[in-house]
Length: 63
Image (tube, rainbow, N blue to C red; front, top):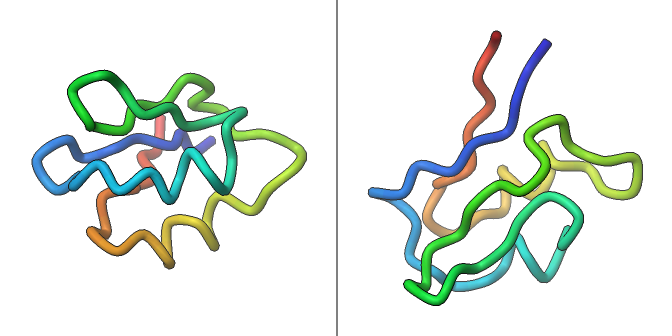
């Protein structure tokens, strides 16, 4: 199984991921994205969001 994560060092806080899938991503007050649902969701395609992240900060880790 794979889990969605954000590489905080790469994240530029653009908000793209939260805009595309607020069920999985959230932008903090520190202007960094965090994952609020690491299992993903049934609504979006997290892999496509990761591919389009301008900072390439969304990663999938195997557990």
